[in-house]
Image (cartoon, rainbow over all chains, first blue to last red; front, top):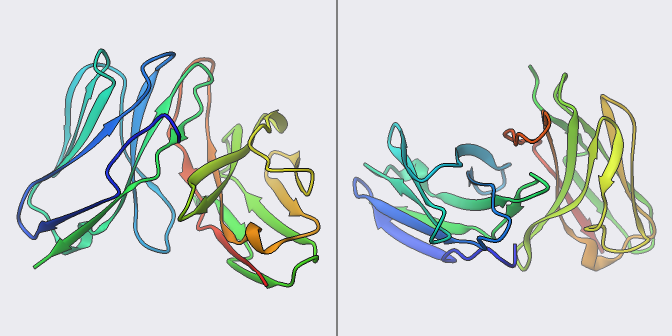
Length: 109
Length: 116
């Protein structure tokens, strides 16, 4: 994950909107995954972006800018259960994801 | 489908002992991945198999680590001898990779390894 950069920790209030950013190395880039991982559990798939733009899936949306090497995950109407680690992962020529270290999101009342 | 199955879920062992972690991928998936997760280094790919053949083992830390996939439904990751710095959560994941297309990885529940 040395080529992927995302904030270590973020906090937000229940009901609010939060944006988790991820920057990555553009050389050889193919696509960008977002995974959610609750404490003590396995990562679970949220989204996969290949093309530029915003993809919406319920309360969660993911954005990609290939030219800028930038992605974000947008969480709306935050709930307490959204407290988790959010992992950004890029795929390159090998099509095997390389993960960032994750952003720990804490949602408080 | 039962998802990816890993055993054991927790393992506590003493330094120098052999540790074997087991994984059963999702039926029909042709690719299997072993990851290690720690607070310091995050989620690291150790090795991945495609159609039971090891494709990339560059992430395997050293000769103490070995992995096998004797058939499409079973893989093992072995550490011999184990050391305290091997303490981590080890995840197995599987996916279906067709040509140049990347597919979603499905992770098992992980094995939490503690080496004393």
